[in-house]
Length: 279
Ligand code: NDP
Image (cartoon, rainbow, N blue to C red):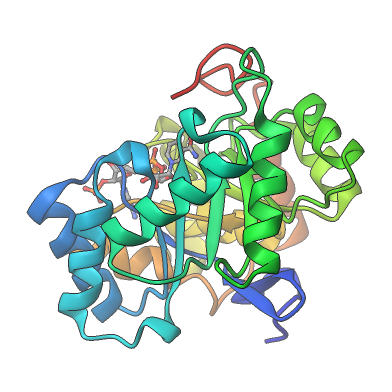
């Protein structure tokens, strides 16, 4: 499959840097649970891992990577930093701390975790990230939980934001947010892509195609994300569910099936409001 085609296994973030469409979410795993889930996921074929300073598991994720024996160059590693580091110098310190905890010397993707608009330094944080990328410390950068008004301020400073990681599931489709991303050519990464094992997994719009295609409801939802061109980072510590969540590239949903899932949209906002919530 072509790298950039909707439905392909990877998508291009910045020239020459491709992010796998399915990654392993690692919150709320910590300690040995996180290390074991990560090494098991890599053995199960995962090549994209998502962690954050705030999850308190970067050391454990690093341990899982080492335990797996995989060559670092074969992995796509994302982490995120807290708002206390916003500012050009702070971002550099955040990078030094994150790479130390993870036991790596570079990151594939480094994200501003929350904008914290009251603090008012997220544009500087993005400038610091662009500088780290220009210097080759990180392969790409992005943001998380940024609303269009926050993104616009970054774009107005002359920066192109490659990716925004936001909460998306069939009931939280955030149409205006995702339309803004599409208009800017920005990749959307969906967090909580299964709605934390949401009750919509038993909706006939999802169980119907699951029965027809011989797939599980979670696979149908992840395939829906992928066919809409998104990256998704489902969390599972379970061997069978990890394999299931990665196995979404050998079948396709029809247009009516996609539209029936789109119709589950409730218009509900994400569970946390990034104008006021941050860490
Ligand atoms: P998910 O939608 O990934 O749901 C995870 C839950 O679903 C777990 O209880 C898991 O249980 C269960 N599950 C996983 N696979 C299946 C399956 N195939 N069938 C049935 N149940 C399944 O929610 P998360 O909130 O964990 O989001 C995923 C990741 O997104 C996080 O781990 C984190 O990395 C990131 N995130 C980012 C945020 C941000 O601010 N940027 C905020 C929140 C999350 P089990 O482990 O037992 O399989």
